[in-house]
Length: 582
Image 1 (spheres, rainbow, N blue to C red):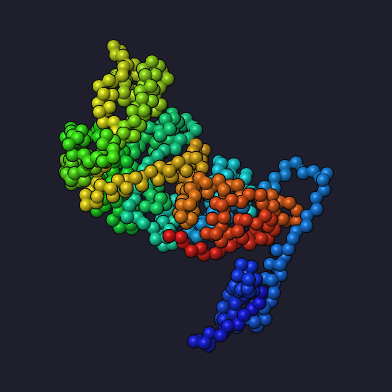
Image 2 (cartoon, rainbow, N blue to C red):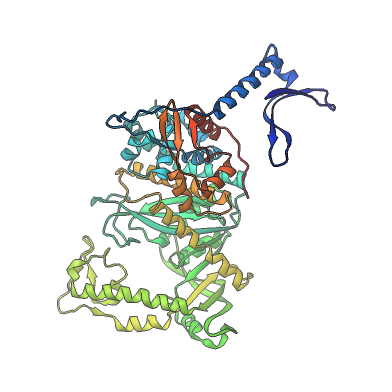
C-alpha cells in the first residue's frame, strides 16, 4: 500500500488517499483500490506536523498488518496434551451480523443518551446488546444467557445482579425505544406504512400465581397457565412497528383501540389501512378507525352476523365462478351499509350507526374441508368434556365448550359446574347451522373503491404477522416467561421484540432470499474454536452466510482468524455505515 497525493484541479486542494495495488487474475492486469482516505492536506496540516510522513507510515503499517494476516500460521500440537477440566473454547461469530444491524439502528446511541439520566454504574447498552444477541443465538433465561456470554467476543463488564437491575430501566424506556427504532427504519429504508397489519397472540408463564398482567384467559395454545396478551402492528414489508402488552384475560378485540391510540399519537404514519382478522371487528373498533380518518380491511364472522348478511352469503345467484372450476371457488361483492353498535364513552350505552362498506364473500372447497376437519377435532374434545367434565376448566375447555349444552363455569376457579337436573350434551342445532357456512369467507372494508382482487391481496398479507409470532415462540423462545415482576416482564418482551425486528430486517435486506428461521440457524452454526496462539478455527460456511456477508461487508468464509482480526471485524460492525437495501 502507498500514499497517493491527488490534486483537485477545480479547488487546488491536495487529497490524500492510501491505495492498494493488486493483480486482477480474471482481467489479467493491475488494479488499484482505495483502502483509506485521510482527507485534504490543508485540513490535516492543522492536526499533524507532517501529514504526508504520518500517513506514509500508516500505509506501511497497513501493508505489514495485511501481510501478517495473510501469512500462513504454523501451529504445534502435542498428541498427549489433555484439556483442563471445564475447558470451553467454542465461540460464536455469526452474531456479528446482528451487531451490524443493531448499530445501524443506533440502539447503542439510544442507551448512551439515557445512561446519563440514570444513576446506573453499569453499561446499559452492553447489557441490552448482550441480551439481544443471546436471545437470537442462544435463547435462555436471563441467568442462563448471562452464563453463556463468554461465547461472544464482546466485553461483558457487568454482573448478573446488574442484568436484573437493568431490566427495570429497560421497561421504563420500552415505548421510547420502539419509536426510536421505527424512525431509524423509516429514514434508512423508506418504511411503507400505507397498510398496517394487526394481530394478537399470548405467551404463557410456568407459574400458578396471577397478578395484574399474568392472568388466565383464552390461551392460543390451550394451556391452563397464566398468560399475557401481545398486540403487534406490522408494516407492508413484514417489519414489526410496535407492540403492546395486556393482561391475559383481555379479549383480542379490546386491544386494538389502545394500540391505535399509541400508533396515532407517537408514530406519525398519516392515513393507514388497518388489516386484521375477525377478532378485531367490533363497532367500537371500526368507529375509532374511521374517527382517526383511517381505513380497514377485516375478515368478518358470517356465523355471527345478522340474518340479512347470512342470506346474502347463501344466495348463489350473484357468485362469479371460474370457467375451469364450475364446482369450486366462487366470489361476489357488493357495496352496502352495515349497522354497527358503538358504545357511548360517557353513558356506556350502545347506539346504532351505519357504515358504508364493500363486502367480499367467497367460497373455497379447500376452506370448507379445513373448517370441517377443524370442527371435528373440536367436537371430539367436546365429547370428552361431556364424558369427563372434571378434566376441564374454562381455559382448557376453550372452543369445545360452545358445542356443549348446559355447561357452566365457576367464575372464581374456572371449573365446570354441574347444575342439578341438567345433563351435558352436544348442541346439534349449532353444529348443523355452522355446517351451512363451511367454505364461505367474508371480508368487509372501508376501501370500497379498490377491486376485489386488491382487497384479497391486502388481506393475505396478514399471514406474515402470524409468522412473526411463530418466530418469537419457536426460534426466539419468548415463552415460557421466567421473569416474575411486571417491569421485568416488560423488559423481557422488549428484548424479544428488538430481536425479532433485527432478524426481519436481515431477511428484508437480502431480498427475502432466505427465511428468518434459516438465517438464525446459519448464524448459530457460524462458530469457531480457539486453537493456539490466539488463532481461531472455523468449520461452518454456507450460502446463507455468504449472502449475509456480502450485504453487510463481513467475511464469514475465512477458515482461520486471529483474535486481532476478529476484534477488528467486530469493531467494524459498530462503525461501518451499510447501505440500506430496498
